[in-house]
Length: 264
Image (tube, rainbow, N blue to C red; front, top):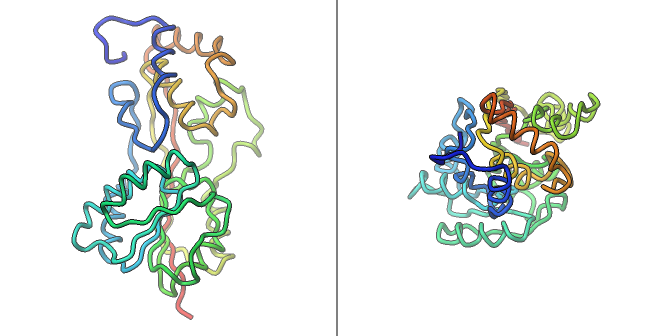
């Protein structure tokens, strides 16, 4: 049940989920409304260890900068001398700049599909949490020989139970994107060496319809063009299902890349 003493109406819950700001990648609003298992490797803490050993680091598609801020804070005095981040969505650029500037990190506005605005071999560590698409040739270009790409990616069919609840069954080719083996092949084709690749599938529970509405507004590629008005009937059906049967269960898919650029 949502974190309220008395059950709330469908209309009230939907209105609440529709009113929450969607900028940044802080998911604390979901506390008590949705749960998600975390990968066993603990990406943010592991990233902190990598940052403590780096001299120049770049975080790609940093979102609101929350994960990088946490990792830099853990790295503390051992944080890289040079730290930069890219982000393409203007509200997130502003949020990340505000959060990361005190850490000495420069946030550069750069579209996710554009070439990285940095010189060849500028960084010994490139990181990313949940990039939309990894552009391997650009990652390889900005890494120094011996440098590392360390990232957590979203895997195939992530939260597809929820996606298909709204869109219906999807063709196999539409649901097989972000395959870790396909991404491994892309990295190797760019001249990179995959040191480690781990994948896990993790349980998610949505405890009320407000959480579903906010999630679909925040993660916009899940149900493209989602609005409360366009999907009111399905939202109402799902609300009734949650009320009668308990949380709606889905599964996220995550994989961890540890990749090295070979020495010349």
